[in-house]
Amino acid sequence: MPFFEVDGQKIFAHEEGSGRNLAIMIHGWSSSWFAVSPLIPYLSQRYRCLAVDLPGYGESPALPDPVTIESYADLIAGLIRQETSRPAILVGHSMGGMTSITLALKYPDLVERMILLCPTVSGILSWQINVTLSPFVFLERFPVISSIISVFEPMVGITDRLLRPTLFADQTGITMQDYEKIRSDTRRRDQGRVRAECFRAMRNNDLREQLDEVKPPALVIWGMEDNTVPLRDASAVARQWPDADLRIIPNAGHWPQFETPEITERYVRAFVGKPVKLLTLDLDL
Image (cartoon, rainbow, N blue to C red; front, side, top):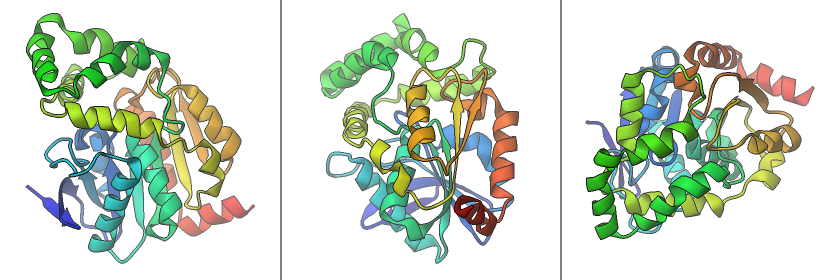
């Protein structure tokens, strides 16, 4: 399996493609590289794609210190420097979008452009998440309670009862096979501590007032029925970041790359197919 080491920290990445330019693909909270997998088949035709497991998720060992969004951004910046001398394209879903924006603000020269899927901007998730899932998140900080939840979860279906309505549209197009993989990532054992740390890290990383400082061009895609990262964050993008190419997709929730893959692919293909000089020119105009 392809592991990379950045400043002593091991990080797993699913790798496809062999282009001269690098695409770093970053999943969201309580997830893995699989979250961005629908975009890999066509992005890998143009880029060398590294879809990472952030430390503490998937196959990547946790950070030695508590998670911050900036620490994740610093690690990805180090990976970019190791693997290419060119600016990279960032693809970020949910918390991965927040990580991408944070990286672009701190290291703009490392980023060519960004594709952001339902990015966490304010760090304040929907009331559904805060009412239903956040109590479990904070209880899971304690290993004993996390083990108890893991034992009883398959019997009572906590994930299906609480997670599915908050992540997907009412008439979602996601397949059962993809849903089961997303669910298994969400309930992966031994990730209780990092889930709690990331939940807190997002709330401590409100980016709304910094959006107008983002330099790289960005495509921002949102599901109209996103019940995880609410559309008020999309409103913040429209208000504070008018240069971003904001697209709202009907019949999609928090996972448009799985729920409406054809529309999402069409937007992404158009964005990556345009030379960055023209994207920058459009911003200047």
